[in-house]
Image (cartoon, rainbow, N blue to C red; front, top):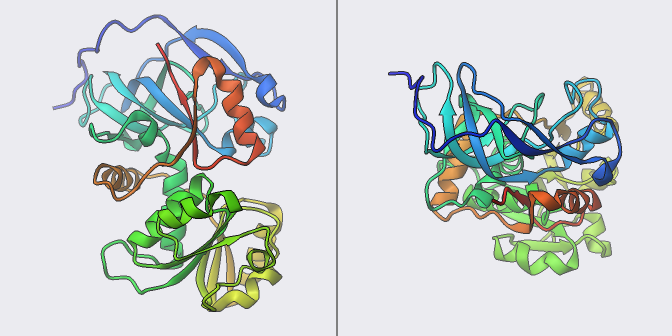
Amino acid sequence: MAATTAPTTGKVPATMRAVQYDAYGGGAEGLKHVEVPVPSAKKNELLLKLEAASINPVDWKIQKGMLRPFLPRKLPFIPVTDVAGVVVDVGPGVNGFQAGDQVVAMLNSFYGGGLAEYAVASESLTVKRPSEVSAAEGSGLPIAAATALQCLRTIGAKFDGTGNPLNVLITAASGGVGLYAVQLAKLAGLHVTATCGARNVELVKSLGADEVLDYRTPEGASLQSPSGKKYDGVVHCTIGVSWSTFDPVLTPSGKVVDITLNFIAILKSALHKVMFARKRLVPLLLSPNKADLEFLVGLLKDGKLKTVIDSRFPLSEVSKAWERSIEGHATGKIIVEMEG
């Protein structure tokens, strides 16, 4: 029976605190604290009282104008899509949720809404959050962990025990995607070589990496496995590495799955397709789906996956969180918590 008139958990106010920008560029200084109307849940949507949101590099890249004319759909824009909170109201047609449910959600990229006290989420990209998973931990999953998961599947990893023991390289392994990728690769039974800065070597090892290279050393720059293994696949989470560096360290049919969405990578990928190359660069754009998010939340619940949190900021100090992401040196996820 559709829960079209579920009770709310307490009175929903008419307005809420939010953070938005009304022009491209500006970085952290372009963010403005505003009071705006609380949105309402339409068909197949949920109204969430947000507890935490996580910032991803794509959030400030959208603000910078790197995804024009597609995103943002219109200005002013409340950024961020990865959130966790509590359902306070449900729209018509919603069957699987009711007021009071704790959830993790990925908001619609066109409309954002994560840096606010309330947001509307689609039922199709919302999953229940068990008590074992905190809001901060859950909010880290939707983009970063799902991207890591889809990269590994593109390489050939399987998570049901039927996969081959592949060798993988994960670059920038101490970032948001990289730290999830290391853990997921080990869950799939893969041999993992990872690159990161010297200060994070022990952390990356503790999450399961078999070999860790400091990217600032000659060995790290060449990406060569200390054990001499060639890579069946690379989860590539950074920029500035040429194909000529990857080529000698790949198996004859090795894939470099690039999440950075840069023009050179897209051209190289097209060239590989035209030439029917066995070694290939494959740009990956996340395909959000509920099944992956449920799988990842389940791994967190069971203690098989961990969200490494770099830093936490209250919504009132979101400009510091934004700047932290832009700097590019975060170890794990940057979390904004909706205090009060």
